[in-house]
Amino acid sequence: MPELPEVETIRRQLARSIKGKKINDVTVRWGKRLVPGKSKFVAGLKGRTIKDIRRHGKLMRLELSGGKVLFVHLKMTGQLLLKDKKAVPEKHAHVILKLAGSKDLHWVDMRKFGFLKLLDAEAAEAYLASWNFGPEPLARGFTYQVFRDCLTHSPNAKIKPKLLEQTCIAGIGNIYAVEALWAAKIHPLSAIKNIPETKLKKLHRDIVRILKDAVKVGGTSASDYYDAFGDAGGYEKKLKAYQQEGKPCKRCRAKLKKIKVAGRGTVICPKCQKL
DNA sequence: CAAAATACCTGATCGC
DNA sequence: TGCGATCAGGTATTTT
Image 1 (cartoon, rainbow, N blue to C red):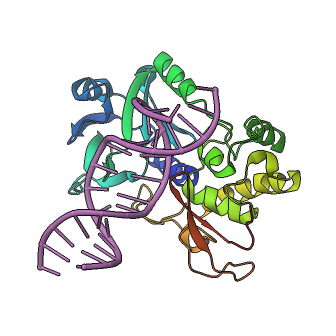
Image 2 (cartoon, chains in turn yellow, red, blue; image 1 turned 180 degrees about the vertical axis):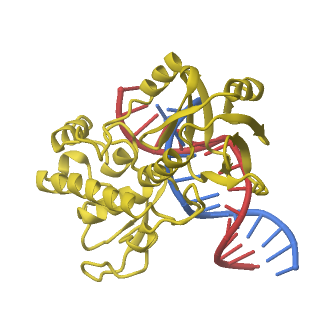
């Protein structure tokens, strides 16, 4: 599933390929998750130029001419694919932006959780603010101080669900939460107030290290994720815990175990990550 | 207010 | 072979 490293990989690829391209036409094959509705969405996009492509956490943001902004959230199974003009759309290709040049941009989402939202400048800023995103973990502002202050605001909260909220860090999902907690040897159900400072510091460093590493190799293709060219990532080969249940822990050889935390599958080392 | 549960979706997988 | 149950999980919404 696309988390920060995957969305960032796609963002970089799109920035290189379609920045400056004009949207000549838009085909909508399934429009239930478009804002505004289908006809306004199409009319609002046609003829605009893609000025820039940005990212906030897992939320992609295309800056368009005329001050319009197109937000794209891929949620679980969403993909943004650059396809040849003559390519046959995949079964779950819901929207196709027909661009100037040799490629079209396909929004594909098997499970239809994602959405495309076209707003004008003012509404776009309000929408972004409504997410209440925490700092970008790969930007300067993500200091240990900032991280700790946000977490200790909810002393009784469990650490893993807190990491999945986007308010203390933007862009972490299940894969990287599982990996970071394994790396820092923290049990996902630990109450924040019970985690020693040294471990919290390590968690902060591990989050940054793991996300940087994952961006470098193009993200994790653990299930449905492919980049804008349809290629897999490289981080699935480096996973230490996510999807590794039953295998020996890379540190202590104990058998990795799968548990549920707030309804989410979570892999831990029962020996390294004690409550 | 927070935290937990449920809804949204489709496809893969498993037990029978 | 098929069929129902279960699981995958980001986020909005509803319930506790």
